[in-house]
Length: 98
Image (cartoon, helix red, strand yellow):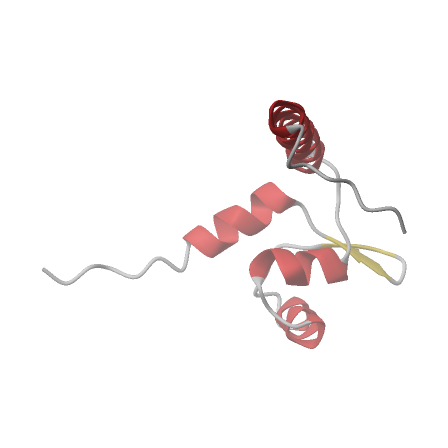
């Protein structure tokens, strides 16, 4: 492996480091936009719904069987919508004691 000496080229090293950090920021922003771009109207499956509401998959199935969570069935497949799950979460708001 070839070693690169940065002692004699401090200005170039600083420029390379700055460019590297700039590239990382650009990649981070692009990935963030891609992750947040999910269609809120697209249905999601049980596994994603479980992650979304921070429950286990078996708990989600139990909630569905008791009709305690908004869901849709098409054959053997269960679907959810993020906006409906958010509203369901909001119904559990606890009153603040002052």
